[in-house]
Image (tube, rainbow over all chains, first blue to last red; front, side):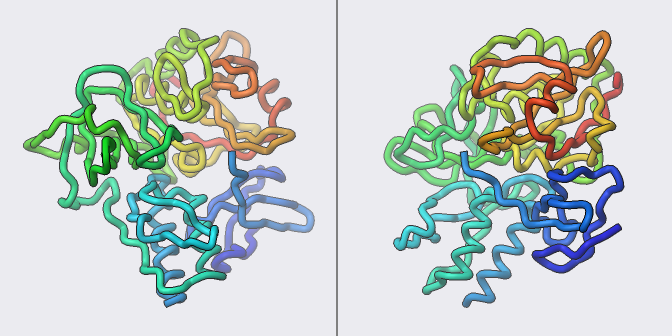
Length: 51
Length: 295
């Protein structure tokens, strides 16, 4: 299962055991992505909260 | 200009893909409208986003960022310096501030880029750039690259630790630190923050160096699903309320896998069962940067 990277549109593979909230990395543009929802599948660019 | 800046930021981000910070001359990025307030710091991911955001809204005539050095480069404009004996040095984000971002302990060689007042801008072996007390540096002229033999964690693979009992050693070292205080930016045996504790334990027990910051550690090694975490893995979480990034090191224990971490809210290094750790925090990922021989 893949979904387009919101940053560069490259297909990002979603591991079968990935859970909502998990962070993934786009292999193409290296941006960190948060798996927001599995159904429907939705990922967003992860914004680190400043400490 | 806008496209050139966008490409420059993307290039920098690609260089960050392996999880190691590159040194960027951010002193050229001095917007005065409040959008950017960095100067001479590491281009960490948060800063890269700041640049990207600024490029979208405020371009002006700012020059493209100049990448001065990365850990694999043979860049020659820096000067090597040796840390003088003594306690760990503090690396600050600013030349005139007390905002410690990490520490490093002698003996070690560092790359010195500039001196301003009583502080020097250096890069330490884990790639972090920061300002240190210039008096703690001595000129050095090593015959070979002092960092050439350092084993570093990589993205997409687990680096084999050359020590046969590294994981057991990590557990022993971790348990010797239980109860020691949290220190923002710390990574010594006396006090550490969460990523500093993990970096220090892995470095001492495996001989493999991790980057200092949680966001950089989060990109290294192989991905591990929440149900497959094993001793030696790095476990990344966020707070249930504030949402701050946090990291711990999974350890072998008698009946279960545990996690050791330096906890800000409890101000100490603590160990707890993996299941408890994942209940108290929100799981965001796990990585296996080290192939421990005794795992």
